[in-house]
Image (cartoon, rainbow, N blue to C red; front, side):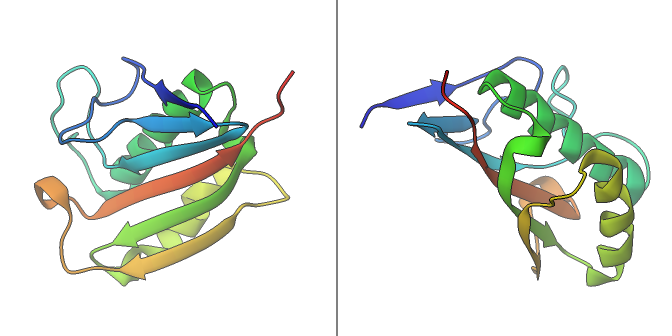
Length: 129
């Protein structure tokens, strides 16, 4: 099976030796996204809520570049440096997703790249036309 590398300038460029996403067949594997502004490649200003929104915007941009949208995400992994933000993530996630929701994991971690408090990666399955 062939692999197609997915890239978009509407999401942050990779900050290491990885791709924004890789498409194999009708499955798109989206790399971890943190609250970076895609234009400046800097962590956005603001509180955790703004950071969560930015991560969802970055995921959405890559999902769209891969031929889908957030509704096509089947598995979402959320990494938090403070699990006290779990409820806030749920509240904001409900603004971006409708039922049926993707499968999901939320994991507490010691640290994340660039000192951010949240990172998400995803697996998306799209219809092939």
